[in-house]
Image 1: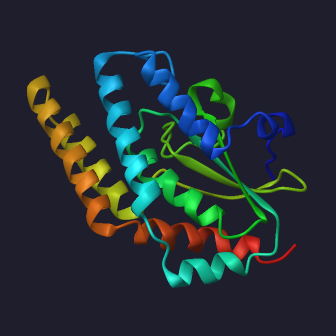
Image 2: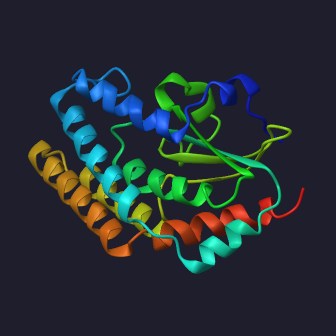
Image 3: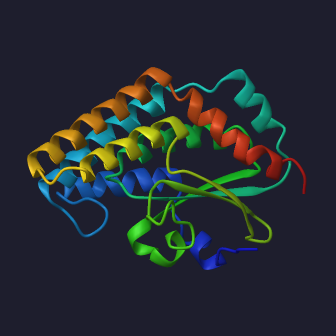
Length: 212
């Protein structure tokens, strides 16, 4: 059994505060974390645009809405993330739409690099991959299950690109592989219209959240 310290949950960001933090930092030419390079600022700017779009345009399926409405166990969805993370920008607005369906769901955010001990307890293949979502019993702070860092099909795209990149010592080719993979990743998200995120997250969430 694993638990999250109540102080972490108490100090976690709401969705609105998380979004405002990213915007405020960007206005200061900063991203979350310690790397404020042009590349990170570029990713942050793209992510603000992506999240704004998904806030307005993403829609929950009827199945998603029905299953969320039936949840009767108070749960907290704790998202470990960073403002520069492209996958997070595609996922967290959807989680916010989902959490708003049922008042028993509390959505909160913490930054990975300020909470290393937390993410290190939930590594993905040995890596601090984000976003990572912990489904927590609100009353006991017990971690019931987790999801992330991305839908399974996208994860395979990422792993294939990493393997291809590691197979060459050509730095230019590695950069080309990385850029192409990022393009394919966001194209996948655009075509899927958040349906797979909803489905996979519910498959993990639902069995743990229907009873007290």
